[in-house]
Image 1 (cartoon, rainbow, N blue to C red):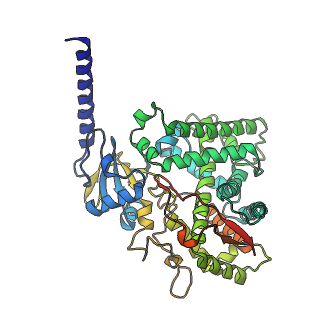
Image 2: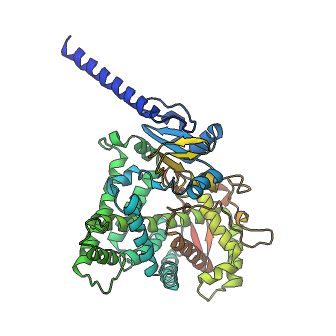
Image 3: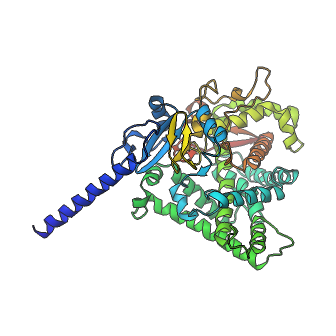
Length: 495
């Protein structure tokens, strides 16, 4: 046999081994697992999903296999939960069984590596989560002081918006700068000037890495990251963006270390450094340098992107439906007036505005697949056996769009959150922050920001679209790990 033939034979044998290994891994532990589409070796169910709209694909598969089914994303086997009842039963009724964190989105996983508050596990996750919640509260989250900080930032935003002078503009960075400054004041102890070049660079890094997780290429990377991490492609730009964010946080931590006063912590980073000093003799402490960098990065990233994207999508919806905006104006004029600054106390008297904000979050569905979970032991669920360690996708989008919970889920309609008397109506299926033990602890801050920023802007401006409302496309541009709206421009007319 010549050399070329020997090499070809070797490659065939290697490929055959990979196929057999993939098939074995797919079948291992299958037992009484939930049903699902038959996977192909290596590819899994790649051919049965639409990478450009994972939410729609996964919900469509559930129509055939039911609200609980098994799916193979390349070599990665997951159990998908669709609809309010299935997600609630798992994350609330069997919270202990479904309480483990699944794999971090692979792009972020290069930075996280099991550290930080968002994607750690076990005792580490408990300690970092408890610390983060307590520290955010100590810096005013959920209290009057954070409300005052948001309103102060709203003043800067309104000045920047007045500078547009009624001309068309893209609101993306206007909103992200404002929202990011709130979490920046907590994590770093101060806000950024809107024209700060480093700040703008940070926001670009956040925006682009978040965008990558919503693309088809990002979904493909989720499935085949072990191979694709070594190949050229858009994932390398995302890695670079996240590395830049991590380096920025490292510089901030170093600067705080050099000027730290343990008796007077200035921000989230200082509090973590003080905790590190207190536990420096504890060999099992979770408070060390890698965790401070990645916990601060998680809080900064999440506190910037999710709320600003929700507002950006929400503004597009108001441009599409000016009659809804007009009703908010009427409520603002009646409850707050034109001269007084809004406050969170006003929200209880503004059911329509509150309903619109909830409908923003429901319809926009920013994190449609939720953060993956992992079962902590062999788990019995709806007559199936899910082996310990299996990843689970609780489809938050399937809950927010559940037709048994919302009368017209595919339509933007604030009446989903209003009763027959026009008063605000809660819904158990309102889960944009997830539910159960690993719900998003930034919920209270996000809720406060959404109300105060929206009411402040609409108190001062009317929205106008450069194109006719009937021509505005409110369908998402990208739906992957994240949902992103289409790019657009708007005009603001002073009231």
